[in-house]
Length: 233
Image (cartoon, rainbow, N blue to C red; front, side, top):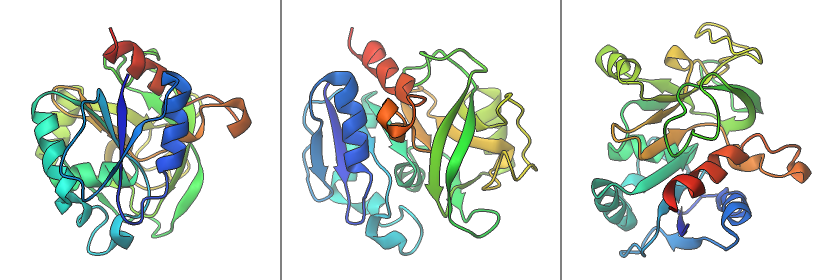
């Protein structure tokens, strides 16, 4: 699988993502600068975490207008696979490639801690290495991770099964009002969503930071091994 990681001014998780992708592909991903105007022939594009453009205006708002994003929009229209994590998720919503918005955390505090996610479906490239209902641990590190959408959008996401991951307890219980299991206050405890063709996934927590025992666990590894298996046939 050939992968590319997009780097914006203020991105700080590109190396973490490169480690995860190298672990499953055996080769280094291509690093793309935000001013690049050509997208190489790749199987996966990743928008990693960080604080693009210092999170001025809104998180991801300025990055959404970078030159490379025109190419990524075209790539998405052709059915390309895209993963956006944390700031990458924010950029995907700002470009309109995914619906909704990421607002300030409910407690108005930056959250840097582990959380637990429940897998909502296992028939996508991003989730098929898990079983539906599986629970796994992953780090979160964000100040604007409160997923919000209007009623119609939420109904569509839930009705069409486009929620990929949900904040939950270690036993898989999700409660939007529980600040322990849903610390940023996301609507419906949504931690990650999919595009209608399921080839674009945005999520706030960082699975790339748990892909090796030296990191403290391999809880996030199934996402990356699953992508290789699903995309490279």
